[in-house]
Amino acid sequence: MGYAVEISGVTKKFKDKVAADNVSLKVVKGDVFGLIGPNGAGKTTTAMMITTVLTPTNGNMSVFGEDVARRGVEAKRKVGVVFQECLLDDELSVKDNLEVHGYIYGLSGEKGNQRASEALRLVGLEKESKALTRNLSGGMKKRLEIARSMLHNPDLIILDEPTLGLDPLMKKNIWEHVKMLSRKGKTVLLTTNNMSEAEELCNRVAFINNGKVIAEGSVADLKKKVKAKSLEEAFLRLAK
Ligand SMILES: Nc1ncnc2c1ncn2[C@@H]1O[C@H](COP(=O)(O)OP(=O)(O)OP(=O)(O)O)[C@@H](O)[C@H]1O
Ligand SMILES: [Mg+2]
Image 1 (cartoon, rainbow, N blue to C red):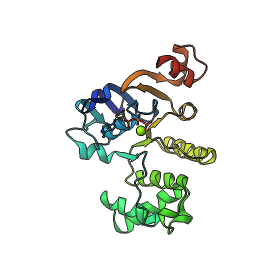
Image 2: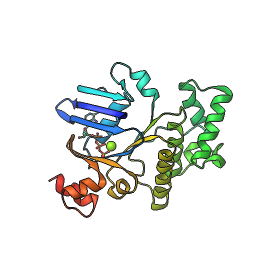
Image 3: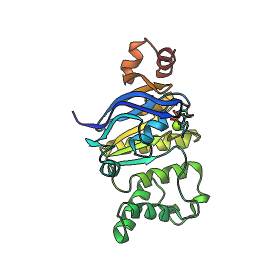
Image 4: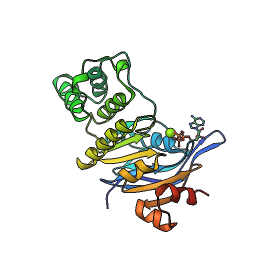
């Protein structure tokens, strides 16, 4: 079976704080995988290590078979990421935000322009193309960030808390985008502490608490394991 992500015995320490504690996970190609856990559980830290933003203290990671430590550049090219905090340039137009990012991945000129237009169409922001990014709503910015993460046509998209702080309509809208990515054959790794989001989107999930993976499996299996009616109930039982 091909894995999009393999994490094996990964620990990340910030001085005395163990943010990720011997984490092992496998994400199957084509899955929508949810990394679920409360605030401070280690979700963002894990996402940052997969995308080479942070270096693990210990352990190994690979992305589509590329070792993240030894072949970081190759691994990173296969990944698009939307971090929890907005990383757009507020002073640029919507389209320029995409083109500047595309340039970093070697997409310039007509090709860059074309890919930026396609990405905007995909997230329904073609009318806002010339708007100043600072004037977009929070949900629109999130969609722009998703468009940006897809510019270099990565096979894996990592979404760190994609709907945090969004209204129910915008949340639904982002969920549709995640489903669209999945239909296009992309692997999606999302972090969330929203259990209904995980139930709606994910084939498989891992529960993480205090930096440790405490359970992993399909949503149905995890519920069955502890005789829970919902994923939330399963998490609360397993996290005790
Ligand atoms: N740069 C850092 N320096 C020191 N401690 C850090 C750093 N980054 C994260 N931590 C700590 O590591 C732990 C895990 O943080 P992380 O951001 O990964 O959690 P999270 O699961 O993403 O939480 P949230 O749901 O609030 O986004 C927390 O205790 C956090 O305070
Ligand atoms: Mg986080």
